[in-house]
Image 1 (cartoon, rainbow, N blue to C red):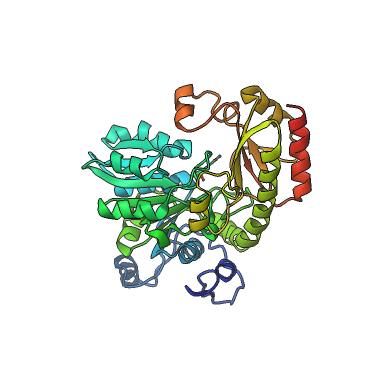
Image 2 (tube, rainbow, N blue to C red):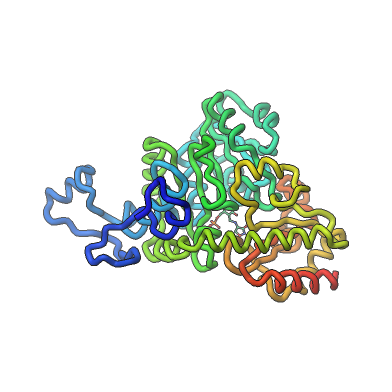
Length: 393
Ligand code: LCS
């Protein structure tokens, strides 16, 4: 069992500990929807919380809880709540913190549906939102209104790789009585711990780095305080967007190697970014490990490494992006990110092909932007694959 003082890799491998009656080395999958009570009186104690016994899997389950406690330990929060997907985490947080007449400030370059669900659906219930470049603290200050309750930051942002200053955001949030919510998906707890910088809530799409093997979807919300943790947990239970035991087992297994996966993919990413930066057909590269990244120093301060996500722009724009996509052989042409396999995506011709230019501009998506999630393959093969595809552009 690992504790708060254990190193990050020890916490990843041993987790928060699990008391198994058969001394199983791994957390078993409690594949059950419900748990029986010894007596009516025992049932009553489980419901009023005087007995810690499990009741029903949507409310809690030993396999899910083992994962929740491990991620809470990794992020340094009071507690964590698993959700069926990253979007389940986003909507649970919005539901728990916002209501009629309240206002949220968010990064303009966020994962599209995190903004879409707010603008298309929460607006119907009277929740307002403003989207700005949260890497510019002056813009945050200007966007604050008397009814602002939440400052929502994705850093680095998907897909622009803009970095927001967590310490500055936290100070603004404290001064103006806002909750600071951070989407930490692009870093995982291995590279960044926003609670240490003052965030109130941190969440992940575990579909990405935390699981790391492109075989489940899941989300996790970590709250700094007991009060916030209870609010989030109650909302998740009532909305019914829980993780399931099998999914949780898969993530617990993937999580053990998070450190070595990221260390290796990150080394590859640095070499790929340097290669791209020198390529004549590439206009720009945004990678937190390159000195050319506009927030290079900030990234070094708040992230333990530059990560494995690279965005770059092709001089040939839309057509060049399409040709590149049609000529890569090793990297999978796929959405998602953060797995052991390299994935490539050209938003303008793929995910955002039906989205208006105005909306693409707002999200920072240009015609030539390509997003690359660098995997753990041999870096020579990754670069050769890109080199061949770029030669066709
Ligand atoms: N937050 C970020 C930063 C994401 O990149 C995603 C998914 C989510 C939240 C939502 O998580 P999910 O519900 O999918 O588990 N990002 C995706 C992407 O870039 N391509 O496909 C999914």
